[in-house]
Structure formats: structure tokens, C-alpha cells
Image (cartoon, rainbow, N blue to C red; front, side):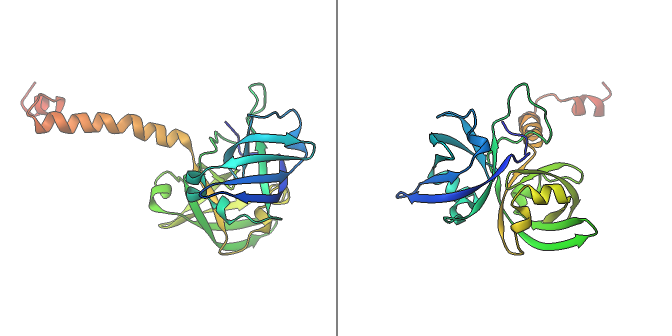
Length: 219
């Protein structure tokens, strides 16, 4: 589990492509401290397993599913990426619950400066937008951000200078693709509620007793 508080900006040194997968070699320093093979590091918000680590860099496998569902497939040698080690149990929870499992790829459609802050407009698919709520949380390339406004096809976030200066967000331009992960709590709530609604519909279709039926008939 991660928090969306980026620890370091790393640089892609090499990318070794397989038939449908890839191996990333990433230059980094802070996130390699205390990290060992098998540990997890979020790369632009995608949870990857460290398969090899040496002083100043680490390697991670990227499977086919991850490449298809994220913007990692667009990375090139020299690309800068947001990095965060998995959260320690005794650490501060500075952002929100981030699983490192990307829900989809969004696209930056607008960048507007507002005094010291910068507004980013991001479009996303309906399957992602259903979990985006105003004043809720969203991870954009692994950065925990607060949703300032929701539109019919996307959302807006307002970014303070500290966040822009310590992540790759300031390097993005209109049209760039970004990894999006919505708040996992909303997805779990929906999953828990949906079976109950499904069972209620099944009982009604089979003529079983329901609270609504009993109320309508004076019970």
C-alpha cells in the first residue's frame, strides 16, 4: 500500500522489451535505501516488484496487463518518473490509500496558473469517473491529489508549488497521458452494496417476500 506522497523523481535508464512485457531499469537513490529484492515501489503510481537492486538503481518487471492498462508503455529512456516505496506500518499517512493498481489512463486537457497554484484539467473514461467525487482523492501518476471540481467528462485539481516541484507534474503538457487510480474505498462500498441489490431483485422476480411487499400490504 502507498500514500501518494512521492519520495523521489527517478529516471528511466533502460527498457528491455519482451514479447508482451518489459523490464525497467530506473536510476534512483532515496527509494533504494533499505529496499531489497521482492519489495514494492510505485512507479508513476503503478506498484512494481523490485527484481534487482544495486547502488543508485533498481529493475522491475512490467507484465502485459500493466502495460495495457497504464501509461508506462509510453516511457522512454530518459523519462522521469514519480517513485514511492510501500508504506511502513509506523509511517505517517500523509496522502490517501493508494494500492498502486491503475484504473485507467487519463489525459491532461488544460493547464492554468492561478496565482501560486496551477490548475490541471484531466479527462477520463466513464468507468473511472464514476468513482471521482468533488473534494475526494485521486492518484495522478502516483501523486495524491484532492479533486477540486468534477465535470461531465473529467475533473480538475489545483496543485501547490511544493507538489509541482517535487513531482513530474510540472513537466506535463496538454495532451499528455497520466495514470489514474481512484479512491479504493468507493470501489469496495459499491462491491458490498451491489450483491445486496442483486439479491433483492432476484427475490422480487421469484415472488419472494420483501419488506416493500409487506409494507404495501399493511404489515
